[in-house]
Image 1 (cartoon, rainbow, N blue to C red):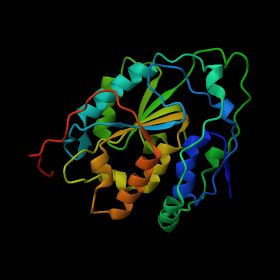
Image 2 (cartoon, rainbow, N blue to C red):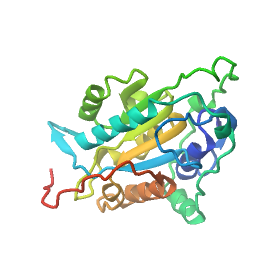
Image 3 (tube, rainbow, N blue to C red):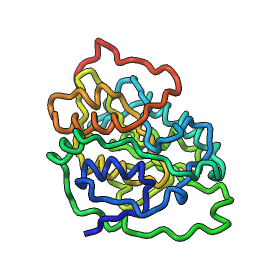
Image 4 (cartoon, one colour):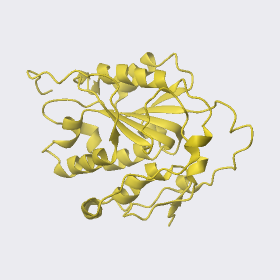
Length: 259
């Protein structure tokens, strides 16, 4: 069984390894091979996985969900990321991932997928050439579990040539330098729908080589009672992510009704 991955910076690998693979997934790529691109996005100095809160409520279209507020926020993030320059030497130093606590390890072990580690992660990266280290070439994948949100994001992000919008399922087996995960769900009932699928969550979190940005509503993702196990996984994930605040986001309307 594969036990070493060569795609992700170790900070990105840490959560999925502990949560879904019983801590057995190791990182074979050096931190220096995954330097962060300098940009206007406020990346924390020692974190490659961040969370951006959005309190705008989800909407329904036929049988699919979408969230205009999260699409708008995603566009702002892509605008900040689009100013990225070649990785700076100063940013090539090792960065320590947030510790996966012993309590979290025990909780994760009880519900871990312990699925075979995908062969796609076994591919060793080519050694960087002088050309690849001095050009401004990087990729951004915006992933979401809802078809209608994919359509909305494609319209909203059409001006960004380096951004690809795709469903999580459609991006399985692929990778990008930076992944923006648009979760969509935001409601007072804390219903997360497709986000209960932990295998889909694992796919979304393991596509990025350099950085992951999760857009969502913390209360909706972590306070659900219909599926306590999924809510617990999301809570552990958000505890591992460093929150980045871009601007004040609207709160969920109190008079919202269940759909």
